[in-house]
Length: 262
Image (cartoon, rainbow, N blue to C red; front, side, top):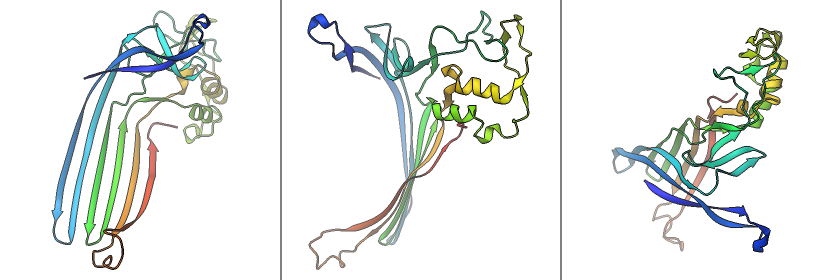
């Protein structure tokens, strides 16, 4: 467990002679675990094979804050905040208005927006795991590194815009379907039963709806790097000024999949 200070530019009273400047406004604690495993599968004169991986899980909490909440990234009220008792970087934005029972409120065509912003996501992943392999044959070596990230929320205006315009495969076959917004219709105070087009529903929800409809699960699989390397032998370098030399063909981010993104 570690305690860390974060310093941000904050606004000052102009009477001080400055309008803004760096200030330590908070402290946060973080704790977690990291596990590493390395295994040498083969180790001969001409061939070697190593595999391994690591697992990390980290949590944080804002423990001291000079203000009720502090936004340090984002646009408008949507963004990443510091709030005492919450993880660092919690995401706040506009949400659907709800009744005392937690039912979503709408007028049959679109959701009512709550006048107050609220927490809509936590960007901290549940855990992250990496796997690597390295194979060596004489002067050739091949290495690869694969990473898996579980959870953590992201806000994506691109994803919600594509959904709202029906441009992702998630909306295939919905062109002629009807849609009923779940929740309570404020015109009747009954469960909503107004049927609208899927196009209107998706456009109102994902294009023009509250920020909470732009939050998606951040689980990803990434092939971070693959490298093929040739190391010149000592004999080949005898008549050169080099003590060692190698040449590599490296590919980075060769595969990326955000599993739960449209």
